[in-house]
Length: 589
Image 1 (cartoon, one colour):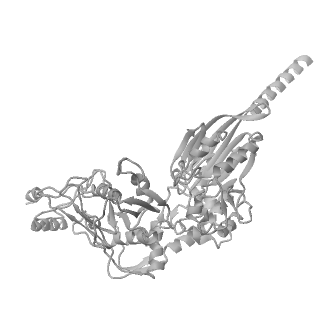
Image 2 (cartoon, rainbow, N blue to C red; image 1 turned 90 degrees about the vertical axis):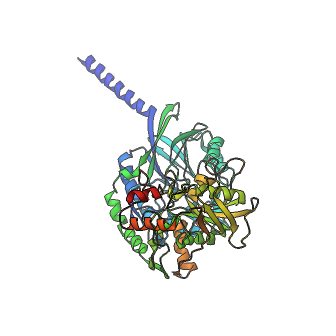
Image 3 (cartoon, rainbow, N blue to C red; image 1 turned 135 degrees about the vertical axis):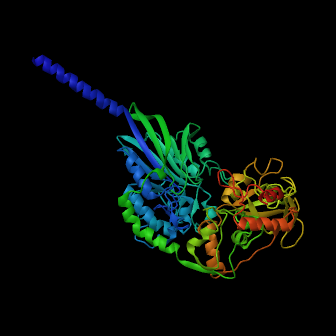
């Protein structure tokens, strides 16, 4: 009996040892990463003064709580304390984003480029409030010390994880004044040094760097592709900056992920390590993106951040100026046909005037994002700028020539359907979204809609000299980031290789103030002294629509009486997709 008991005891001991050994041999490490939250601490967009549950820190808190475990590291990869009224809170005892990070239990915060927009001293004061580790390894103070640590090592279940934190070197371009006296070094070279020193002392290497995939401005090592190619020892790169969803791609066998902006996604990276002698070795890496719109706000954190939300909402309703002399957009002649897309208006004129002012560009291009966009005569609240500029686009400066401008303008004019005899209204191509129709400032021109696409821009002249725009003339143009990145800086949609591409001179112009929407507010307050008046440049018009004016007026009356309506696209997203014709009038009669 004693022998049986001893044998059973030994078997139990061996079983426990085997289980324990297996636990030692395999460990799963989880990283939950955010980036580019841009002060979206609450599910509210203070720029538009409306609820926005597409993502926020309080929702992220719920997602992290659901997905974390004992071996989880939580990291933010920058652009944290800028935008969405972030500048209101530098005088607070603690910034709402940092309060949220501390409550959630973030381990690491890496500086983004926008962290420097309000001056390094403001950044340092906020960093002091953070309970985790702040990394900014390639930015040096005037005294030669680093602004933040260049790395940290975190141990989970015996596994040593090296996390290196860097920021794009192009911050010296965007925040030149704020960074005078500071030194910003090559993030790839800095990373290589750290890896060479520590790779044999750690088990997992993660680089959290506020850079997009590709290099910007042709600056070597300003994109994570260069980083992955230079440092194959890296297991995971947490990229940021481009606001582009990258759920997981491999470059040089390095796993790269990136989040969307404004708290819309949370990246989850699962790393399996196995014991290899005295060290752990990475044997598997998986990643996915968690959609934050699917989560409700975490109640305790939401309660703690409620006072900041109230302050920001009150600020959104502050009166910043007054519009005198009438509305910016005229009433539509025909309901269902946006007047601001068929004639020059003070509405688009103001947007282009603002873009021209802050860039010094000779030409500016802007679109009507909302078909009924307008700013009416009277007091202007801070949030009212969203009534004429809905989206949070930033401002770009590009260099192009006259030939490229003409191609760009022709592409834009594709928005119109070709006028045909018998048409009594101007109509839009069902396959072209309204936000892809730009109107131009700094040049005078006509759009002949009787011509086929690609041959509509006529009498293109400089507004100031009235001289024709020559193909080889080189100048600066102001556009938003969406237009630049989606259509103008790649071949296919607007340009082909024989045209060449415009040159990027500056992105996120005046990014410390925000995007185009915020620049409109700043322009009203600080440039126009709080008072604006409608200023229609009257620099373009549509020609070629040689209809019978009396019949056109009949259409106007019939639509007004409700006896005729303007057709929309089947999905409802594009208005006015077919012209009303003389045949339509006959059918009504």
